[in-house]
Length: 246
Figure 1 (spheres, rainbow, N blue to C red):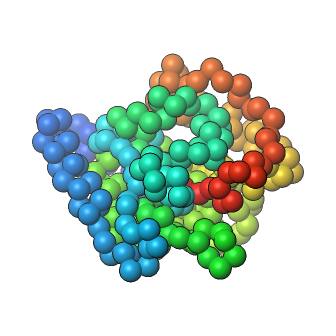
Figure 2: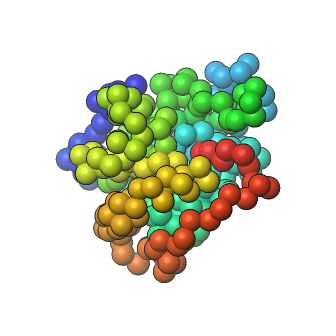
């Protein structure tokens, strides 16, 4: 799916917001769409734990996070980024738990909506491709107030920015300014990025301050949390999921 197919200009979004129906009918239509998504069984034969689409948001949301696929904890709880990778992402965004999970302001929509299972080596399988092709266009159209979309991880980058496949994840993230103002590109916040962060200090020194400024503008400055902005990278926890992914 190309970015062009789903891209809405800021002018189109503003028009959509200003001409929208009263909030009740808008929410009712959105709820109907969510019910269809959550009832989807297209990938059921390929999902070891069965289908359980994990996504969040309301039509009023202004920040959209497009991630990879739910991990086992998200599948069990139905809550996106409910693990240490979520803690790291919230630190990057400088958002506390309450704001991050406020569906009226933040929407979360992974490339693969259901947990895909593990491969022979014990790592998570790639997100199922059917989800984005079937559901992302109608879901993005039903989120007319979005002002900033975060593409988190290589699968989100490749799906929305097809030309990024020609470059490494590091090269793409280093060019974050080129994809603004619509997209802000990020690596996945798993413990695998610990060494990457140390090798690429520009990410915390340049990209994250820009990201937080933009999020503050989108969600209002008071939404930003008072947590330390760039805490030292933590060593991986052996007891945590081997490859936490969202």
